[in-house]
Picture 1: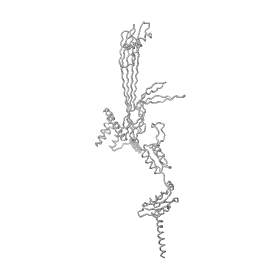
Picture 2 (picture 1 turned 45 degrees about the vertical axis):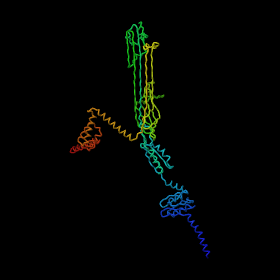
Picture 3 (picture 1 turned 90 degrees about the horizontal axis):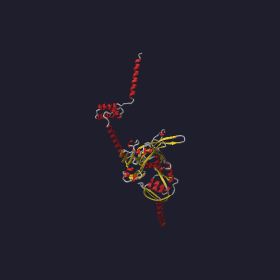
Picture 4 (picture 1 turned 180 degrees about the vertical axis):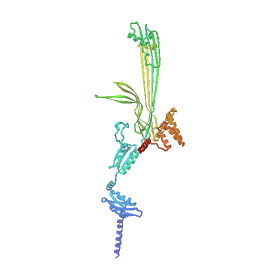
Length: 560
């Protein structure tokens, strides 16, 4: 019996560690603070979920596709962390709704999420970004179910014509309508906020200096000699003596004549300079000397404001019109074409974040003359222009380039052999020289201008315009209608500010009698009298008078 008890005790001692090991193998414990200790080894996921449900007292429901084993040792974690760790290693997920936890496979979760998701529509109003460009930006961000539509593209050109009438074009700001999931719409909203920003503006001030110097030098000596006849009596002038002899103008008279016209002293177009002539009996001598210099300077400073990456053009000059004909076998069509001449500047700026400005430039200085060709006026254009791409800093002045042209014309007329004789040959020689010099320089100053500075410049310009207007009116005669009206207005306003309403009404009435079309003074009188005039007042009074007249006539006719 004693040995039997020993055997039972030894057997119990040997079985106890095994039982403890079995219990410690799969264990889920949750304390009163909600933290979980979990120890499992190659245990079915559903079994682990069951242990978690029992300990946390939550309703965990697993899909039929949730199968597999898990091994984990977790200590002092929350219920959510423990559940996420157990499911993630097997590719599972869960949805928690109230006190229920639904466990699914990833594929099932995606299907559920897709079924639950709903698309929304949102309208984006664009201020600066074109709708077509915005559509290009957002298209890669759309989901497979997302769609986008836009309106607001502008027709090129803004000069209206009769052909543009009758249409029903889109007249609102550019809009982009997107239908997609909310999270995609939020991403697109952030993108459009960054893209739809006001562009910077550039003020370009160009200075174009053109100088032209023309120098004319002329020197000539002519003489004539004629026998038997006084030179002063020749009808064609003294220098025509020899020609008259050749032409037989003097008949059978024996006459000898010599004339030299190489000096071109008889040219009637010669102006300025010095002309001298001496006639003595049968001999005459004539002299002309000219030194003329014409200096012309043309300076233009066009100034224009332009948006970044937009083309701008300014023309200060003349548009010369000419007829252009198109002839066919059956008809001839003539149209009026125009050639722009003067100072012209075409450019497009590109602003970089570092403050540098790249400019596409085409400055042009031109003039034109009309010539007749086949009965039609054809313009010939004389132009100096530059086409270039430059890069400079904000506010810096750059020299685009210059053009220098010089033309020298030397004209010589002389009598052969005699004109080559030193000193004496000057009497048998004429000289016409012309030198033309022309130089043109293009200077350019681009500046990035903030909107605030642009608005301030606009206000300053309005003040200047008002000052010019006041100055111009100050030059009117004191008895002119405008000056008298202005004086009445000033007196009315001064009296109104001082609180003298009677005088203010008096001066405002005088002003309106002098010039009736003054909305400001009409409003001032209404403010003083507290009576608002109506354009229908006269018609209303006429209606009342007609009604009273009819009533009076009816009263007179009733006794009869």
